[in-house]
Image (cartoon, rainbow over all chains, first blue to last red; front, side, top):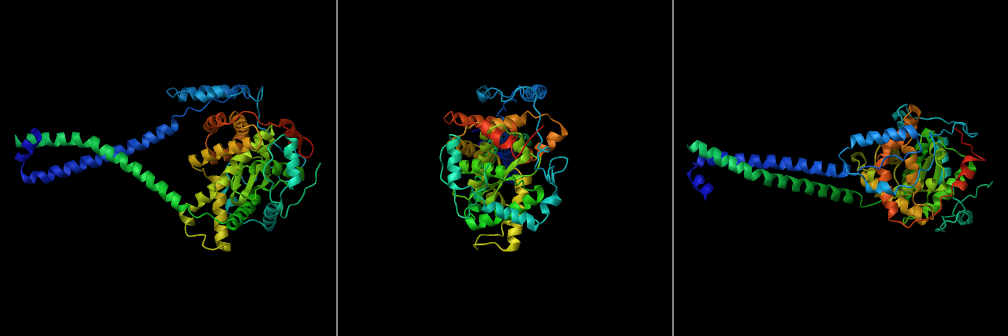
Length: 175
Length: 284
């Protein structure tokens, strides 16, 4: 009742201005809603609190990692799945191994990976050599023999699956 | 007086319209998301033929081997292929899978179209059981099974011109696709949805094959607790830049494992026999 009575008194020339203001208000509200929706989606994705690294594998780093995570995610809910983690796989300190002492290390190293661990663009863009192409072709034709696979699965107490395609298969030498 | 009334009306109108506008904007945003998803589905409607997949996969594999080199010890290659094919038999899409070992210290695993699945020597050196290897390969098999890389490439603007109206790509198209495949596999994240799918399906494939479903999680847990030295960071950066963070995956894998029956083989002794003794000695 109040608003229509006011509207009747407002001059026609003011109605245009009023409409423009209303439209702007709707647009501003829409922008706020869009941002809010995106933030909600991000919030939902980030709300899963990751489980801390299991202790025991790496005494010092494991503990530090847990403390840092707790500090950073102080307000996050703990993940109930963390309670289902089994006992640590390894005891004592852990070091990432290198295979550089292998007897078969003909060209071992980081090969095309920069100190930051990323593949260098020049390597990504390089055309493969005929040797690399031949190796990819050889890889495509290699397939374990069906009997070999069945024996392997049985020896490991695994579920027998469908035998792989045997066309062009090569049976590698065994131990 | 009239001015005051006009201001009053304006303020009331603003107060009334802001919440309505906010709701409208939120719905617009949701509608936009749905349209985007619909577009992605449409883009992925026609998959590559098996021949095209093989063509792109082999050309990309050649580029990958060109970068890292291939570890060609027959016993090790045979072992990885046996484990990989055991798991791959549980994947629904028939793909001629082939498994290779990349000759690098970098710790990662990746897959290319056509069933080309690679694991690095750095990764193998840090595993302790066949279940861990099976779980890692199973994740990559799931990416191939679901055509994740193909979908990713086909959604890239530069690749949209290449359609599969022909049974085989031209040499130029093939090189373009191979380059895009390798770039995507080595430098980009799959979406969270695709990674979650691969983790969920991978755990299922490994479990159905008879392995403990915890294999991949145990390996990731081990890597997650690695010391933060420059060497270690260099070894793990590639994995980190192409997959979601370890803690996130460990938590989601745990959830998936809880849905599956317990049991299965770990086969740590057999893994040690093949990987840590005999043909390939890995020492610290």
